[in-house]
Image 1 (tube, rainbow, N blue to C red):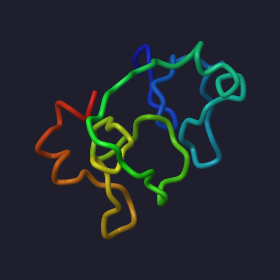
Image 2 (spheres, rainbow, N blue to C red):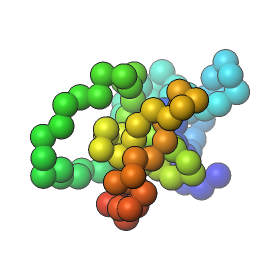
Image 3 (cartoon, helix red, strand yellow):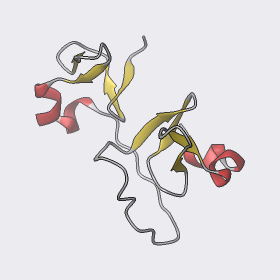
Length: 102
């Protein structure tokens, strides 16, 4: 791993005080990290010209999701539920990867 890792949709400093192994063997935010997100996560800002409704089918997540090997802005114009019930890139996202991925 590098200096940062993707944990629950956040880019978190890759250190044990900020991430820990969850019950399913994947990383989850440590309690300290949850209480100190400003200290341990990268902040990004992005502007979207249009107003979008909140995607009510998503559970609360950070500003990004790991989808199809990309770290994608967690917004309905970029992500949709696929046939298997997992998230997939929208057609718009596939055509505009430089806009919606880091």
